[in-house]
Length: 175
Image (cartoon, rainbow, N blue to C red; front, side, top):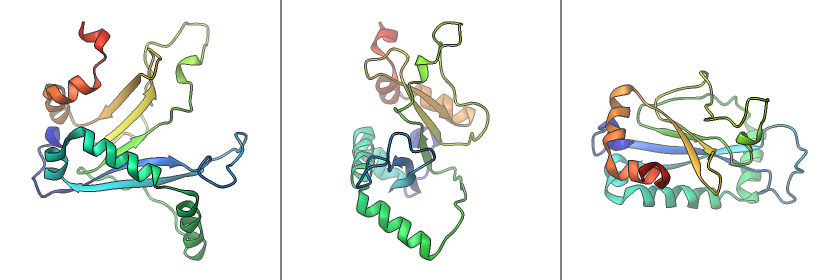
């Protein structure tokens, strides 16, 4: 996406995602817990670092920050919030990427009498430049469906990026 946005090499950027604390807490929250129990985690880098190191490195850094979000980290955050409470405000930057959704939702298993959905979309609300939604894929077997929000000129560039398209395109579609 940084290629598609044509950012300057020294531009600071951030890839943010949400971490589910339900199973990270000790003891874990019950599956019946009603409500959100998430934190936002981020990987920060310059545009040139992301381009030089590639998609695999960015994915690994996201994996590391998620795996390092432990019971201790979650509890320390809550304790600091109790001391100085604040209301979280969404801030969007044209230099950042925000990843959302959850594999916990069996999105294609909902049946309303019309057959299996052809695709899932998150709807009109809460769309902004740099938002990515991952859904468990319609094909099953660990596949993933993506919804990416970018201005049309950036989306056109992204669709022309062969490395990206090879990474996100199903082999069954290519053949």
